[in-house]
Every structure is written in C-alpha cells, then in structure tokens.
Amino acid sequence: AQTVTQSQPEMSVQEAETVTLSCTYDTSESDYYLFWYKQPPSRQMILVIRQEAYKQQNATENRFSVNFQKAAKSFSLKISDSQLGDAAMYFCAYRSWGGAQKLVFGQGTRLTINP
Amino acid sequence: DAGVIQSPRHEVTEMGQEVTLRCKPISGHDYLFWYRQTMMRGLELLIYFNNNVPIDDSGMPEDRFSAKMPNASFSTLKIQPSEPRDSAVYFCASSLWGPGDSPLHFGNGTRLTVT
Image 1 (cartoon, rainbow over the protein chains, first blue to last red):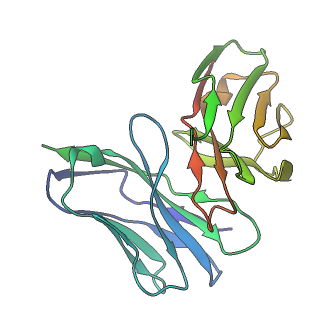
Image 2: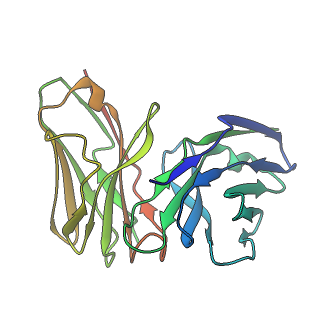
C-alpha cells in the first residue's frame, strides 16, 4: 500500500519570503499522480498543484511550484513571496495512475505566515 | 457552480443516536467520495461512488457506517449507533472523472461531535 509522509508538522515563514514544505511517499508503481492541497481555517480543502509522475518538468502555479524527485520519491512544495492568505494546513496526496481512484494523504503541515 | 454542498455544517449528538450526513455533489460529476478527518488518523477515505454505484467501501470502519447514493445529485453517510470515537470532520468530495484526471472538489465538511 502507498504511504505519504510529511515530516514537518509545523512551519513558519516571514511574509514575502519563500518556504518549502517536504513530502515523501512510498510506492512500487511507476505511474501516479501527486498533489498538494491547502486547508485554511474555513476547513475547505483546496487543490494547490498537481504533478503527473511521467512528466519530468516540475509543475508550477503562480507562486507555487514543486520539486519532484521521482527516484528519491520526494515531492516538495515551494511557496514564493508568502502572503498572509497562505496560512493553512497543507496536505500532500498520492493517487495511482489507474484502478483505484482513492487519494492517500499525508498528515499535513501547518504553515504560519508571520507579518 | 455552487460547489459541493454538505449539511449540516455541525452536528452534536449523544452516543447511541443515529446520525445522517448529507452531500450534494457538483452537477455532472461522476465520482463522489466520503472522507473522514481526525487529528490522530488524518484524512481517510471511507467510500467512493462512480455513477451512483459504490466502488470501494474498504475504508468504512465498521457496520455502523453506511453510505448511499440514490441519484446523481445526493448522497448520505449514516452512522447508527454513533459512538464518541466517531467524532471527526466528515468531507464529501466530487470529481468529473477520477481525481487524478480532474480536480477533486471538496465540500466544507461536517464537524460531528458525539458525546
């Protein structure tokens, strides 16, 4: 079974600076999807970014980018120019390419933005 | 697009009572998922449906839990009888195709407290 590990329960960063959240995963599959979700205090889960494992190019979405290292099974999220609205829980998630549609989530990292 | 709608937002009940959580997915979405979030276990998939048919219920903790999707626009998650350890936030989510191929849209969750 696949597992996702986020080793940083909490992180903090100064507003306007850059922060990187770590995620590692364990799988024997060669094709899969990886995701980062954001959960603000409102509780809603919001998709931040996704990466297909077959793509070598790292995904980017505005101030959010990932560093996908397939061999190391690492998938970190970089947030540039941090804003107060970025404060939230961030969850890394894994999904197999075919078959089961379930997302496997990590335990989350709570990100605090200091003004 | 009204998003995924869950009700109630909060539910407080006594041990032994029946609890019904409701979900209206985004119109046209073929997949519907029920997740449970707790501090100890994080986000866990309970069950998911494809075209109203339950596909994988291996995450349902025990027979006290049941889920139905009588039509494409409505699903329920029922707990009978409820226990204090069922206290959690329950999320419903939907996607157009599988969540790797199209974004997974979450509702705002139902916070269940069983006393």
